[in-house]
Image (cartoon, rainbow, N blue to C red; front, side, top):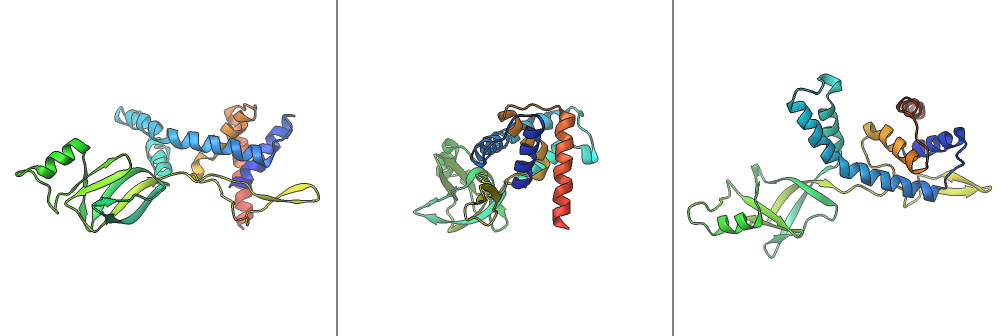
Length: 226
């Protein structure tokens, strides 16, 4: 997807006599855009969920809340982690914990104060059937302690990089480079990515124009897969 976006950005800039950007500039702009969109996904979902509560959302394929939820769930990952001296080391790419399980038992999230209170309680102490966990300063604690637990979490976004080789003075797309990284985002966000990158390049298109370019990208993508 990253090459289609780069080629289309260059085409849009050329058509509007805006010159061109280098691969380095494109990678920088794209990284800014993806991280911005990623950070806004959760707040956008909260706003759409509020609209849905007020019956202002469409049903079926027009259900924006459901569609955006899929874009967020694109980053869901799962990993089994082990206890080290009573604490658990989370994967490096964790941003938010979604849920935690021990076999078929789900842990309940508590703040640190509640965690310490319940752990010491005689009447309300958590059991293996109703375990709890707390997360503070990157340190995860669970009670009752377990050797292994399964953590479902939202991972960090991968840094995009359009890689290339130079042939006859021309930069040629090279997805086989070791540091290549395609766009790490759900395809439904394509029009937003394209539009935001163009904005950083100084070109602001109308919504209809953006959609026309995105449709061309999708058509070319389908042709390349045949």
